[in-house]
Length: 301
Image (cartoon, rainbow, N blue to C red; front, top):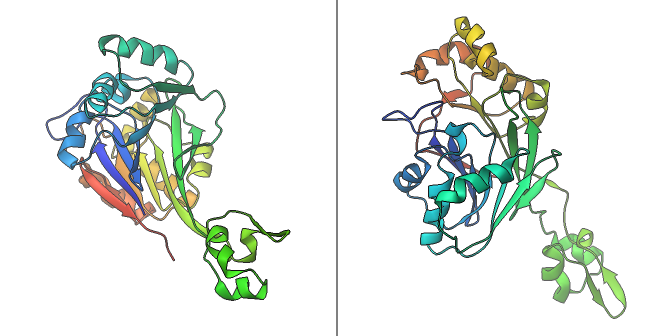
């Protein structure tokens, strides 16, 4: 199972009921934080999450509403007893940004491993496969797809047909090769076909692009910015490098996603739900995200 919590769904400035951009993705006791806007620590506390399990932080871009909460977060993680290294990923220039922000942070009890994504190559956080992709904003901006593979099913009949000794079944089931009496046994001899995993795609602060559509293909959940709810705001969206509800809905439809949740609302958007009707005409399974919203995604089989 993969769990996601929308910690902050606001853009530009924090509001009394809406913190700035941040999303926590958790699997098997390990967590990945996407962005760390102002108020992320408070949102984590309210949502009942711990700081210590955060292994990886993925930054989309360097605007303050997406990264200004980082120094305080790192300090709190240290105060909660984390000693294992923390990996931070983001656009080129990330090392300078992190170094500058950490000037106000005392020496941390854990190492920071900062990775600038010069190329959009996948990387891993525990069992999660994370694939960055290019967004289109006023500055260099990255979206992220998260994929949790599904273990192949163990098939005893297949193991017997392949004359695999029972003592090796457990090893092979874990995906490890084994040798006994000079014979090599492989996982394919006991495991069934590949099974579909869980995919979540997160994109904010961008105009709609073909790259986003490709990255979000067949996502179980597509979390996408909804800066403006009505189509008459298109000039502002183009000027600021943001999206309309309708544009995000078209992306979700084209990507054949299962579910679309909006985030990163304009501060002027008091009631984003008022724009849902038009978006749902394009992509019915659309909803407005809110601070503290928890989403649990399970394997389909």
